[in-house]
Amino acid sequence: MTETRIDKRFQDLKAEGRPALVTFISAGDPDFETSKEILLGLPSAGADIIELGMPFSDPMADGPAIQESSIRALKAGQNMSKTLQLVSQFRQVDIKTPIVLMGYYNPIYVYGPERFLEAASKAGVDGLIVVDLPPEADDELCIPAMDHGINFIRLATPTTDSVRLPMVLKNTSGFLYYVSITGITGSKAPDVSKVHEHIERIKVRTNLPIAIGFGVKTGEQAKNIAKGANGVVVGSAIVNAIRDSLDTDGGATQKTVSRTLDVVKDLSRALTA
Image (cartoon, rainbow, N blue to C red; front, side, top):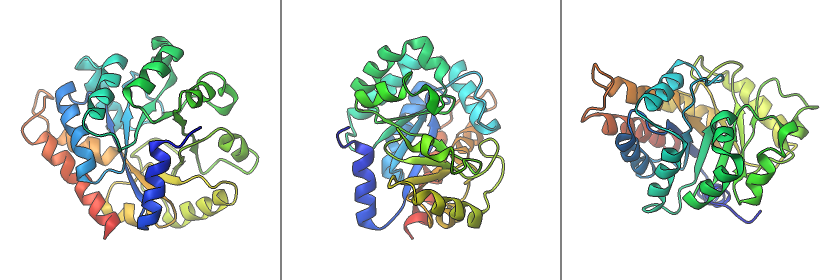
């Protein structure tokens, strides 16, 4: 693969001597236009890489916060075409910030894998995280994605042992996403010392940047956990800010965008302090 936006961003951050802030929102949450406004504001708020969730009705690895954000988006009419449209519109004003689509294989399969990859590449997608496609299914989407110049980013977990790890790393590109806890997103705080032990073990096997996610909610947590890695991923804290700003009918308010971006600013300040 040629150098991608993700590769370039991690190189630039290494030169700056700081970790990446990787932020997650669900595409279309709470509605298309509000989601677009949040997405466009993320880079200036401090997001270095953006994970954009592909809403799905049965997000198995996600906790209540992200499940709810996905449901809000689906109720508002979000679908794969609109998610790719969001990326395309973002690219009209930002050609540097990497965007990673994250989610499950079902919506991609229904859309059509080759059609999806062609549309994603054209829209300006840089990477994919598809949590329910194991390495044994690399021919299904991973290798075709790389042929389209899209990084395929895999998850490693506390239970990924030395036998499994080489298979996980084999076709991974862009960065490795280390899941800091066993369980669903946003469920509990990670044990920082244990996480760093696992990261050191993985670093022996790969030169890929490593971003740590799951359970990171505050700037202080992000700062501490990022010390042993190249980046930190925050999702639930951001989608909770969206949820907490909505009106009683679940609709966006005048505070939705600003409150969400304020959370990202606080996280960014903690990482760059």
